[in-house]
Image 1 (cartoon, rainbow, N blue to C red):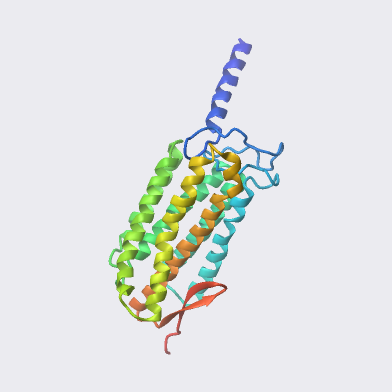
Image 2 (cartoon, rainbow, N blue to C red):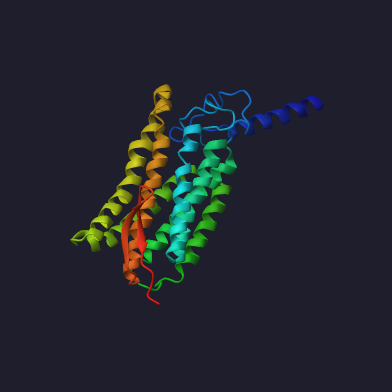
Length: 296
């Protein structure tokens, strides 16, 4: 009887482990080599998704070195943006935007650095919350005062509901991708309505705004179509080639610059709505909005 119980327990354990094996995000096939290091610090990868980059190929301390390091710029621009928001006394909505980029950066470092479910959840749920902050900014961009006081509560309910569904279903990754992509497209659509105010203007500020909008609007979808999709589609077929290209790391860099440009674009627009004197400037190689101090 003990042997039978032991076999049943072993069988259940085997089934649980089989479900915990990470899979590629496109074909949903199990990853053949979970770790190139025999003793990774964070243990064997157990996230539901594993990316093209070889795991623990460079060090036992970081699962995906290039994908992890390419997430750090999100933290840098987040700190830079939060400092600018504080310096120029911007609206709280911009604090949420810059903080959102930073939290996504933290989640991305955790996810790609460990390939554990906790890191994956931090990364993906942070992306949803940050996109809701971006959406709020553009939906409440036109008038000085908020016209939809209920909107933050609706977004909070959506975020909580999404998190519950996320942790309830073990197969939620495709729905996460679809929901996030739909939010990004809605943000771009709404931001285009703001862009049209600058499309025909002949001024330096309008030229800055047009450039920032197109970098934001084209960057994210283009990175998804030209970097994220090809890597995940072809890496299982040609692993050595695509592991050497590090397209996901490039995707991180482009999708850091794209939302950065969006927040700067919306910052200047809000300054015009609020009748605050502002101008575009370059600092540390990045465009930002300099806001003049209000007269005493």
